Image 1 (spheres, each protein chain N blue to C red):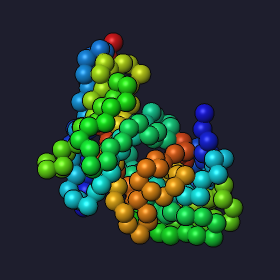
Image 2: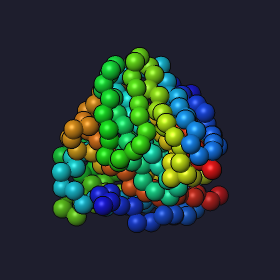
Image 3: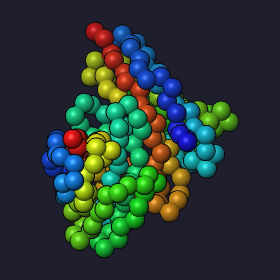
Image 4: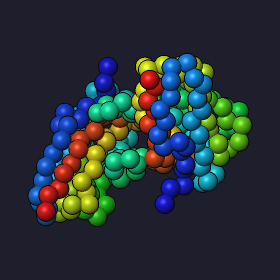
Length: 114
Length: 114
């Protein structure tokens, strides 16, 4: 039973469109993350947040932006989608930011930009 | 450059036998290691972890071994069950600007046959 929810699960959209991928968690976690994964490849951290009004870019450069206005909500936005943005986007949260706090992942959004 | 490597993209094991999944890392600053399990169309779920101060951690059928000198860890599943069929991601963490950022491997797809 998922405590972290991502919508939509699948999205096919044309080039140039603005999209927002939704992520919500009900666990009250302060730490939230966005990872990007291409098929057969490793997960790459693209954004993270340690609390409300706190957002940082991750290790992998991304043209997407994020916001954290509420603890439970961490949406990711692409202002103008391109085929290179085609990927799976995974949202995660953790209770603490330390190493003993495993990440809880959502089921992901698979984005295809045509 | 990839700092966490899972060199076997896939592994097939008979039910009841041992599954051994391997992982190598290059960054000596990693001090915590995790395994995640991922079913198709779902997000990764945390399976087991080990701190760099230990060389073994066991949880039921799952045991993780760490060889720091070789920068190698392995996940043993005994006995393997068909429900264990999934993609297994090795991850390593170190303290960084993004907290304990996780570096993931590309995953090993395990198939347990009846």
